[in-house]
Image (cartoon, rainbow over all chains, first blue to last red):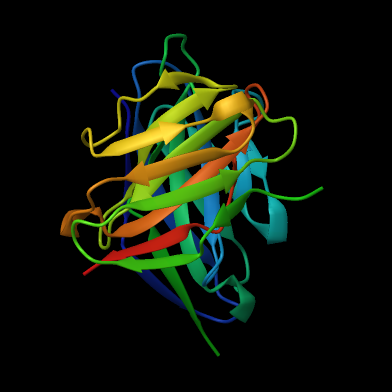
Length: 117
Length: 112
């Protein structure tokens, strides 16, 4: 079974500061990993994905994440926060094994990012 | 290209009533997924269609929920009869093959 843990349901940073959102996963097979962002009253938007190629993945809006197998982590970072980054962020895992449940995403609890001026 | 469209955006009904949610996936996407987020909880998988067939319905909570995807295009999710614990945001997503899923804006369902 797969699971995802996001450490910290709320993270607050100042504008221009580093953003670090933590995600740890559990999977019995090499996973595909994703970060999605949800802005108020909108759906989930894909930020970036890891699919077993490069371990450092660059996404949209200046975000990136590093896959660390030894730590079972896929933390999301951005060097300098902007006010427009305020949103809820979700880490998700999908099995790349076969079987009937190959497609479903398992999500973490979500992390609400607040950016202060 | 049009994204995933969900209707209605909000629905408020009384316990015991019936509600039908609709999802129009991105054109050409064979995979269609339903997820639900109950307040304070994580987003949870409900089921997965490949074209018109149910590939995985392991997340459906009980037999009060019925999902269909006639013709392999749009999908409906019916809740009958609705209970208080069914309140939440219902998301639909679609994808082609193993590409990442694209999500709709969700339907916020409130059961009174």
